Length: 339
Image (cartoon, rainbow, N blue to C red):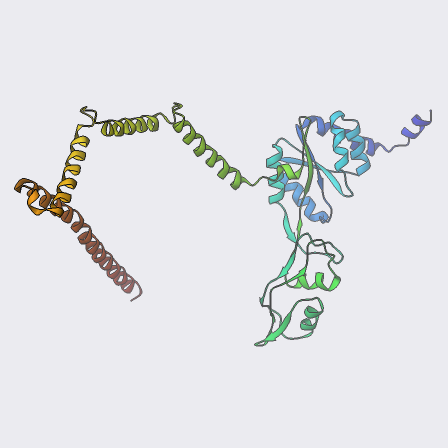
């Protein structure tokens, strides 16, 4: 009787809110808990409009959200992520896309007095737009190394004015805003996402896509190399395997002196090279050790070696001349363009 009496005094709008949240949980395969603390109402409305094509943002009292979660089966575990200022987001996007889109939608915001620095706050060295005046003393009082230079206020050196986790004073918060340094980020802060009974938190959803892509490329290269070395044929490596086998069989044939049509040219070339090496060594010890035919062969080989290297030098000279000509033409073109 007492419970029924209490239930009868619950306003209808609260009951409707709970039912609407439960309906959204059933309607969408994915929903998350987001923090909305520090977001001005006007900006929150804009975020809601921007999300309308991909997600539904539901803002409600924490007590009503908890009640809806408690009455929605497995969604009850999301209760632990409800914080001071919380909303629910419902979508059909996968959790990783949802997290990425919410992070991209965040915008820089001034830090308020008494707030905790989310990271090291650094004021960079350089000029400011302020003329000399009381602001110089205000900046110095806020811990910013300022001075007058050529009729304007300048910051003399780069300085960390607040470290991560430190409370920001009123003077520093005001000066950072005037310097247009916005250390905070305003946006929907995703606490957790529920999909098919699995909970995803930001530490899992925050993926470095560039690193993953690099890792995948590296893994693909390593897998390809391993398949080639293991001689494991696939459609992707079969051409490489055949080329490798052909090269190895040719080398084997040359080293084993196998007289086959595919290696006979290489064998003859190798024998010729070895013969000339022996002849050269013999000639060095005794010029009379070689007959005229061998001497002629050695001379022809030496001449061929000289001829083989000479065109490269000529090509270098020609390339250099071409580059100089191109450079002159380019300068002439610029001269014509600018008069």
